[in-house]
Length: 167
Image (cartoon, rainbow, N blue to C red):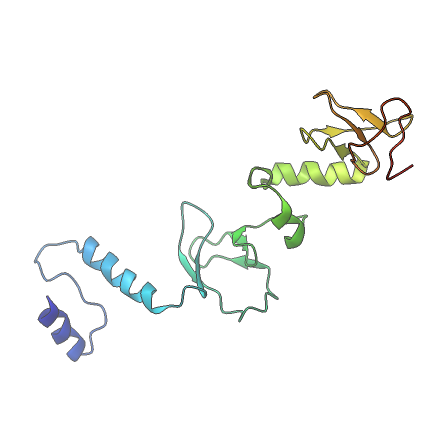
């Protein structure tokens, strides 16, 4: 095998096919692709975040991170070049990175933006959104925990409904 590949390389042939006649060469081609990928530094390569694509891509930004929105040259779908995930519109990268893995879908981000606009708060225990329409900042969630609507602190006095942080 080594002599076969060496002879092809000596003839300046870069695409070396399988030497077995009639072979589709799938394994040989995958081996060639793996060799090519091994030459590229790990920090520079990443893969398209779409599972049905997974094409190898190169990060040639030099670590500057100026480009955020990019298009995969293989499947032509948008992804975030900083986060290496499908494009997350309506949220910046810093905020996106702080989200839990199960809160990164488009619908979750839309809900978070609506919650921000409506000034809804999240229960610090169960993370469900709540809305205060009137009254003091004392909130008792359906999960049973009491918290301050202003700062989400749980040290609120249940008798006086006074938060030590917000007053």
